Length: 623
Image (cartoon, rainbow, N blue to C red; front, side, top):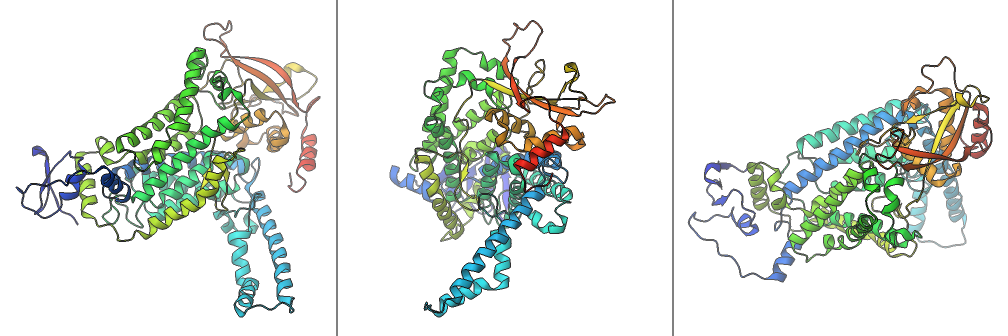
């Protein structure tokens, strides 16, 4: 254990029998040489400066720029996002994917098992054909491999670990397999246990400012488990982004130690730090390039922000104010957006950029995300995107966030620790990221760029993008029900937590919290049709049944004080626009105009008609 003696009153810290170092120093040369044995009055001789040599040393050597404090900040930021994500899961998942939820998770598990059975059947036929063909000569090694693949143990392992796949053919990794096939209809305790486990571990990481591989691996598995069975509720781009962030963080921490600055790994290796910067580069470039490649000319003629604030998924307190800013200001916003998403990311990854410029590039990304947070409610997307930007800020940049003793500890621990001759794990991790990034780069360069897509079966390295198209009109779907469809005044509207409905209700600032149902309603209304949102039929059934869990996802139940129960339900589309502040005679925040009846095209739906609709559109799933 390194013994430290603090002489903070004199502004110095000393390692026993070693030299004094100024307490607030950020000079890499002093920090690298402070721990070496030498007389206290012996001067330090600096080598002759060389730009190329210094830049290469900064890029290749993990001790040139230290990131011990950076890791603490990054882990606490990641813990915050994890904690919010698992809190959302604990409060909403039973109503969304629980045993009596809108789209129960057991359907995803059962369908994955059925795909595994079909895959095994096809593979058995292929193996039987190869082994039964005696005319073709094979080497003993080839025959041995085929017989291994035919073995029952191999078949079982392959089925569990690989063949149980989602609709895209990717392995469905989930701890819910441990519940057993006979318990798929009783997954609520498992959903709660995964959420509580995630909240507990993320709270621990946030409190300690430290983590190890088992903790982060458990968090990653818990989040991937929910993402695998979450269906459309976990189909947002920030879910795989959080999973990829958790995967990167595994290589940021020591194997077992829970010290914020462990002696075995006092500062993360430079390869891991560069992987975070590359991660942020892919996020921002994906979001920037998709805007130029889309068919929406508003990003090219600089008019996108004229409509963005009014049509974004969940408006916030400042959204209306920003919407009524001058047109010139909105054009300036688009230019800034293009600069931040397409130009500035290059300064994150160019290896010979001075550290001051890289810090500035990281701060630009953080400030950009903070602006988005203040003007919208995009769940924890912006909070999550800020995390890899922290990797652009080294210890010298973040030391003011910590006590002087922690700063000195980080400096000395990084200087004393000896890096391995060949950093095997970081090198292998860097090689894996490079290999899996090839199709991602190809997608970024493609004319038809995919947004929020995965190219490897485990979804470790992905491509991202957001808001390639901005709607010019906000269309909201309003759900209402009635006990009798003859009296129009008896129809009662359902009010959601944050989705616009009541024209007098003002938006709230809720980020980083995520109301999944409200977001799915926005996506459904943006598609203008129910064909891409089959979950909505089941949601309407739950409303007619007055399912308590589903009603808890709403702001209130319009029938709670009524002696009657709803028997008819419908979905109408309205055009919503902001009232200019001070001009609304009735004090309304929105103005709305009826557009059309969405469902059913005529009349009203009943419980029976909705069940028939589900049987016709989803014949494989029970109601």
